[in-house]
Image 1 (tube, rainbow, N blue to C red):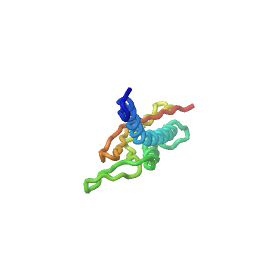
Image 2: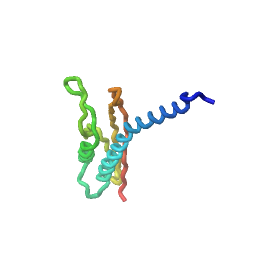
Image 3: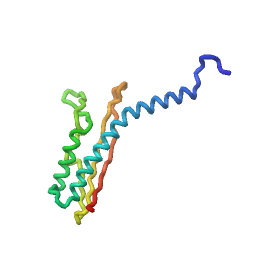
Image 4: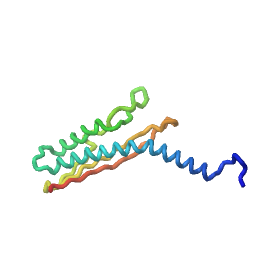
Length: 140
């Protein structure tokens, strides 16, 4: 029989694991939700690649995707005074979006590699997470 008030090591370990998992979910889930918006923007761009009536070339698709992503999430920028400031959008330039169209014009792929930086709240540290998102489209 354990003495009253003694701490169970297994319970303490499970509690620490649950708190850590909750903290990581609190940080990582918004990034995953923003990545779903990135997938949606890439799907719109890939759809433009395979439409017969689309007037968008690769540059137009890049601008379309970058324009949509200017309203998604936030990113950190270094200021002149050395501080970091959180600003709206993912900070994706049109040149960051890779567009590939098949020679026959019946399929295409839009790819984006980007990084998200999050601030770990109590530590005041920054953590960078890299994402690779792509969407393909074919003409039916």
